[in-house]
Image (cartoon, rainbow, N blue to C red):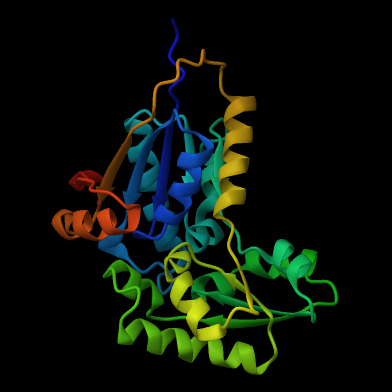
Length: 270
């Protein structure tokens, strides 16, 4: 009998893409998931587009070498810098990418003001500008770059004084402009959602795109990959990091919600 198992490769600049991986696991319970945290090069937000494109290409090649049949770019900054190039190079491969949730945020706002928390690289990208032009309409979009937020998540510091100071610093100017909806424009930021909620209050909507990415991945897997016979076998997760594997094991176990073992990304891809 044919196996139902799909192998899906997922990468991010670090551990933030685990927030997307959780949605992927829910959508594809029988898929084998391979996740790479490029923590040896984090954050991507202050790197050049060419640097990020080169890293994205290396990580995609590694995931393909491990049998990945589809790729998820679980990083807004890498999507902006590298999605087009990856799709050109691997044109037969399903590649699903992130983008800040401008469209659903515009639909959610009650007063017509949406705030965006994102990396500088995302906010300065042509892709983000195109999203605003396409979906913003009459809604006022106010943006805030967030240096340091990725790093606190990489350390597993989701509730400490430094994380709170940064969240307060970056949300304050958006709230002063009456934003009633905030886009979490980096895959690291959903892990800070409880803290952000404490800071901004219950009346401000928080929007991210992890669930939408998982739905799109499932659609493309179901329509573009050869059919498999369902056998009801639970999928596996395999984790790699280009940073310190021991530290990554500790941090990623906490974020994933159960003990995991993170392997060192091979040197040829690091």
